[in-house]
Amino acid sequence: MQEDINKRIVDDFVANDVSFVTTVPCKQLAGVIDEIDARKDIHHIPSNKEDEGMGLCAGAFMGGKRPAIIMQNTAIGVTINTLATLTQYYRMPLPMLISYRGELGEPVACQVEMAVHTKALLAQLHIPTYHFHHRDDVEELDKIIKYTFMCNKPVAILTDASFWGGY
Amino acid sequence: MIRSEILKEIAPILRDQLVVCNIGIPSQELHAIDDQPSNFYMLGTMGLASSIGLGLALSQSKPVIAIDGDGSVLTNLGTLPTIANNPAGNFILLIIDNGSYGSTGDQPTYAGRKTSLAKVAEACGCETVVECAAEDTGRVLQEALDSGEMTIIVCKCESGNAKMPVITMDPVVIRDRFMKAVSA
Image 1 (cartoon, rainbow over the protein chains, first blue to last red):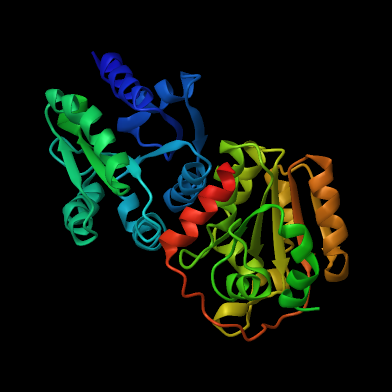
Image 2 (cartoon, each protein chain N blue to C red; image 1 turned 120 degrees about the vertical axis):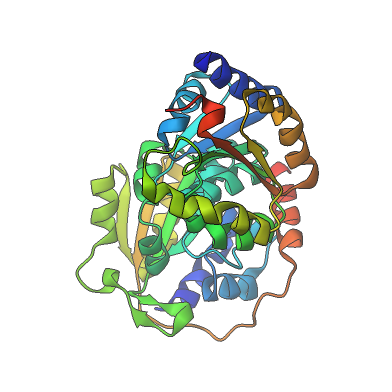
């Protein structure tokens, strides 16, 4: 089941011609990152920090590829300046598949500290935000990716522990 | 030599290439010296010129020159391992190392003191790293282009800025004309 969801997510990215993906790991996203790494249709560039990853994605977009970033929600704290002055300022599309740590089922208390700010920060940045809580929510991913490249905006997909089936 | 003198000297080489230029005064200087649609000027986001340049080089086949500064590379030091481990033969990172944060008042950087960015790049796994004097930048840059190998150039020069106007072009215009130059 877990493998199915990882494959399903990556299939949706590939079907939408997303071919350049940069990742900063999270335990919840380990399976989807493995799946991305295994696909020959996707150029996978692990990055050391999420703002660096957004720079790579900006370059890839201008090079004619459709990019995406995979990261943890703590990254929103790291990338506000990049989102505002690069991705949004130059009007570039960027699907952001985000593990929403610090939600129900979270074992690590500190993760809650950024979780409580995550949606507020995304709202402040006027970033369209979708929250995957139930397994069926993945059904919207295809439309969300299409929407992202239609409007040339960064778009957040928050995926919490319930969505991933717990820890 | 200061940065603007180097940019003037290498402008004929840059003109025919895709250039991603660092935020602040470096972009203002390049824009004033020789504005080209094939120049992507960073108006914000200090530190990401090398990341944007690498992403661009990995996504299409034309040569890409990212013009960065020592302060900006120090801001995004994680870029060097990423560059080293994802080599693109069409990518040149030109670090104009004047040992100072030029756009913010010429405060000294650590690259102007004990830290060697060339050695850092080598330690990160970058295979072709050339440190050169400001006067040799044009020759070294042309050799890097001719080699077809990913090259990190650390060009040591003096601190100082030319007084140039702020870029008022809309960012979407910069991006749009750049993307047309990429796909031309």
